[in-house]
Image (spheres, rainbow, N blue to C red):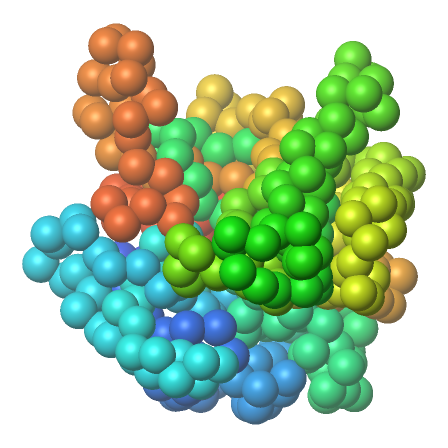
Length: 427
C-alpha cells in the first residue's frame, strides 16, 4: 500500500489544523488535579470520557488498574500504538500559575496525605495525544490502518506498563507493528529530537536492611553495630564505578540516597537501612554493577559478624529505553523534513528512565521515543545568554511550568507525523 511522503504528512496536518483552546483547557484541568501512581482514578475517568466522544473509537478501561486502551480501526495497513502516561508526583507545586495544583491526596501505600503535582509533564502528554487522535480521526479518509491508544498508569514507579501487559492488554487491542512515545523536558519550546539506539538509562532502586545487635552506647563491645555496617557499605559502594567500571567506555551511577538508623544518641539500634539507585546504559554493565553491589553488601555483613545476612530488596526497576534503528530512521526522515531546523536526529542520551518500551519488548515489537522541549523561548534564550541554563526548573521540580501552546503544537504534530509515517495513504 502507498506510503505518505513527509510533504503529504505536512499538508494533512495543516489541512486538519485544530483550535488549541479545548486542548489547553483539558491540559489545565489535568494539571490542576494530579493523582499519584496507581491512584489515577479521576484522571482516567476524564480521559476515558473524552475518548468516548471520538466517533468509532473503542475504549477499554481499568487495564492493569487505571490504564486505558483505545482502538480506531480504519481498514488495511499497519497498526501504530501511541502512548501517554496518567500519573503525577507527590510534590507541592510552587509555580503560582492560576491553574496550579492544590490537590492533596491520600497515598494508598502508606496512608499519608500528600500534595500532588504534574511535575513531569504527563498532563501535557495526555492533552497532546487527545489532540493527535482528533486530527487523525478527522483525516480518516486519507489514511488506512489501525491506531492503538494507550494511557498508562504509574510510569513514575516503572511498573504501569507491565501491569497493563500482564492484565491482558493485547487480548483487548491488536498487537502494534510499531510503538511511538514522547516526553517533554527543559529545552527551548519548539525544539525536539531523538536518537537511534539507547535513549534512556536503566534504573534499579534497592533497599538494604542491616541487622545487628542493639545495646547501650557505652558498651559497643556487646553489640554488633548496624550503623557501622551500613556506613562501611556506603563508602565501599563508591568504589564500584571508580574502580570496576571503565568510565571511558561505559556509564554507571551508584547513588545512596537514603540512610536511616536509630532515634537516640545513646542507643545502638538493631537495624540500619539504606536505599540506593543504580543507573546504567548497557545491560552487561547493569548486571556487573548489581552483582558488585550484592557482593559488597554480603561481604560487609559477614565481616561485621552480622546476626543475619543483610536483606536486599528491589523496590523499583526501569529497563533501558532503546529506539529501534529502522523505525527511528523512518521517523527521523519525516521529522527532519517537516520540522527542520528545530528537529535534531542526534539528541543527547538521557540518564533518566522510562518503562514505555515494555509495551513493545513484551511482544517483540519495535519502539521509537523522542523528546520535546517545553521551556518558553524567552526564558531559555535569556538563561542561555547568562549562562544559567541549569537554573531552569526541570522535570520533578516544584517550579516546572511548560510553555503550553508551543509545547502542545510540537507534541501533537509529532505524534500525528510519527503515526502517518507508518500508516498507509488512501488517496
